[in-house]
Figure 1 (cartoon, rainbow, N blue to C red):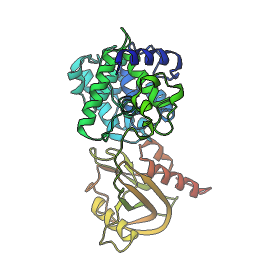
Figure 2 (cartoon, one colour):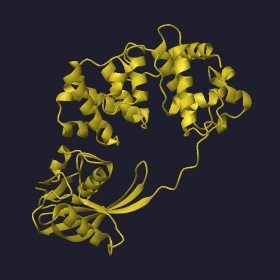
Figure 3 (cartoon, rainbow, N blue to C red):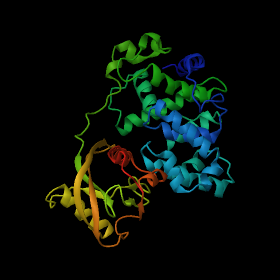
Figure 4 (cartoon, rainbow, N blue to C red):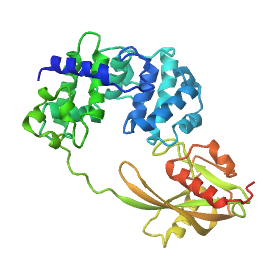
Length: 373
């Protein structure tokens, strides 16, 4: 492939067709490294339309790396609430603190130092170094993998180690071949092409700036590239959660628990409960067992409030939320990091996963005109 011609065409196309997005306030290659970092972490596996509002709110709350480093983790998680992949928010916070402590708040400009920061991998390094500092560093996200797989008409499955090495090599060759001063523009053009033209289904080949240079287009295999192996069946779990009241529902305080700081959804708050196990007679028995194991409390389980279905990266759940009444045992942190008795109105101060936000919505809908303390 003629990488110089491909890079030149991409940059020329991008100069005309690039989208106007809030993290693109400066030319590619001259952007604020902090803003590039935040936007790229947010954009991973998340739609651009979703990220726009989150990015703007984030930059209002934490406009600099110093502001992020000084923030409380709960404030960081609250700002991230709803984006998912909460380990990314925790890693952003840790990395900001490391940048301030070890680099005086100045963003590193070399690959190895950046790779030493929590949550930063090869793709993010390439994005920061090219888009902020115009360095000829490669990027490889989902869009870029698809574009390069079609340009080179790669027949091997995209998940194979050898294929990934080939794609990184091609990405490197392309950005190195970019016109002088256009490394960042070349990388962003590659991502933009994948987002707007070289889309997964029905690629818009007739208006693609590199159509004449694409091997898949020449061979008529663009619909078959990249080669993606069939996915394994996704496990499904039934989960019970309790809205545990001190007294009468909507007339007393309710209990929320904080998940352990590390692991899935670490640091977020939730209505406590857990997965239905083989020994549980039913979901209500599951909930009573989980509350005893995690909080050393006894409860009586009342009516079901709502059902929430949610898909995570590697599994799906159906969550059944029940009203419950605290009957015995002071809450203890056996399987949780913390717990609080709160009012319904106070829930807004805590970061919750999407599933629990839906429970909160159902609670407020049911509350109606009830008097909540």
